[in-house]
Image (cartoon, rainbow, N blue to C red; front, side):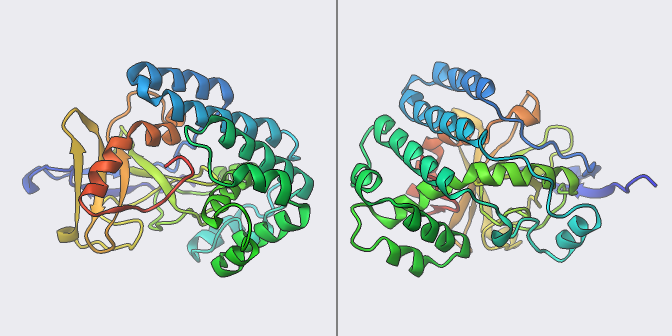
Length: 321
């Protein structure tokens, strides 16, 4: 039996009420991102050609991604731990498709990743992160890496911070470093799960696969579907346009947007309820799966400044922001 598609009213931003129209939203064919080293290098060059001032931060992203891809080859491919009806059941019950305890980690590889990604941050950052070099060379051990990963995955901030008490580096930086380090493990596990799931209409502000926050989003050209992308595992999911992904309010009086006059293709959607914002790419002419939102995020840093000047904060921080 063919899957049913849904008809919904779409109110395009700035469109008067009488121009609302019925369209088909959601085709159960949401394209997940397709990211590889050659695509990252090509897109990075394009962004830097448009704005040479991005050379430093984009170069850092390329370096980190290169390490992630290289070491991810040591992560074995595994069959998904759930399939078919179990995937659908977890989605309907709003449970994660990949629970923290279901993520399989290779501890020696995890340590290698922490060291190499950390070294990349030391070498490529415009300002060397305080204490990171000392932490990597003198304080990082397999036992500490294991405990940090457990604290990170459990979401126990107090436990995580206690592990780093007295260390040379701030816990906030190590948390973001671990976020980058664990990402390849999540990529491997999340890909097959996302392909099995119907993710084009998921009213959840966190990733339905791993539970992390969205780094950014875009509007799909053919139907205006608002698509968010997870900052950790890279999964994409469709999300209501008139809803804040961070506090889930649908009060239109509290939801609005700003954009830079010279760049109307990118908007920061602001929420007066939680005072957070998310950036959305309004129009993209290429293939959806080749839209690299982590690079879009870096290229729209001035939009972050504009939102922050108005008193809003990013809903999702990354090591690059």
